[in-house]
Image (cartoon, rainbow, N blue to C red; front, side, top):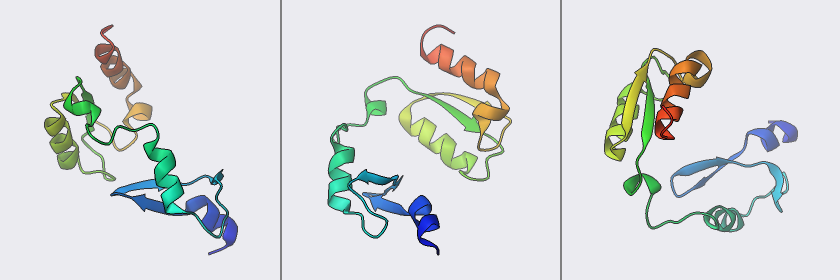
Length: 113
């Protein structure tokens, strides 16, 4: 793989999360990324103790035709979150294909719907 392509596509795993890295950030070079520094940067603004969905109302749009993330997994995640859920006839990019339904969900979540 060419160095330029590698710089744009490399991923680093941090505790089961995959974070795309923008080269040049975090003091990174195309040849080396220090995962400890990256994790420290990411955690700086995160509360690792409690996920927000455990304590706050949540909303979720299940994309029924999604072939990137299975709709069954999306439903499981939404149910686990206790989320107010809608299902849209869309693939993975539901916000592009079904903008009205997604906008309505966002408005409902904000109390304006």
